Amino acid sequence: MLATFKPTWMVESLYHVSPERLKKNGINTILTDLDNTLIPWNNSIGTQKIIEWLSFMKDNGINVIVVSNNNPKRVQIAVSDLNIPFVARALKPLNSGIKRTLKRYNLSKSEVVMVGDQLMTDVWAANNCKIKSIWVKPLVETDLLVTRFNRFFETIIYRKLKKKYPDLNWKEDIN
Ligand SMILES: [Mg+2]
Image 1: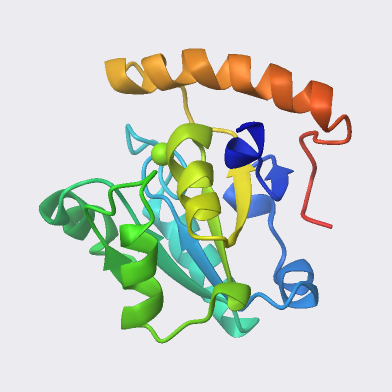
Image 2 (image 1 turned 45 degrees about the vertical axis):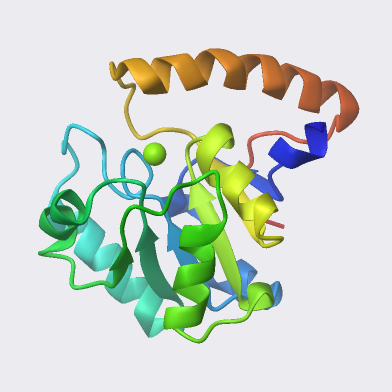
């Protein structure tokens, strides 16, 4: 049961993950959550910074695809300046959105990693799909009620995970 929520790695943020390490692990595509993983839910990080990061990843052979539970309209608006593909209404923690993404972009499970700020949606969905995952800290704290609810359980789950897997800690990059 606990393994359902176990991330492959825990990293400070999406922006800490290096292309070299990803490639070392056979990964060429990041599937990223949108809110509080790629962009803060209140949009306080400049778009220019994200565009620069995206082009850095691209230059180093890493593709980025947004896989979000949000509705298509909201995701479309959020990524409109970023020029990256997205899958909306992904229904995480179910695996249907990730499966749809793999099929649409002709990707195998071993070459992708799901990155997200929530154990109970992003990491659980990745495990449901048997792909690697990176749990990241949220870019900003959120007041959304559903997220606060998830965070409450997340704290309990992480405490249990930590007990069972003592070396599961926040790191600067994946290993
Ligand atoms: Mg999120």
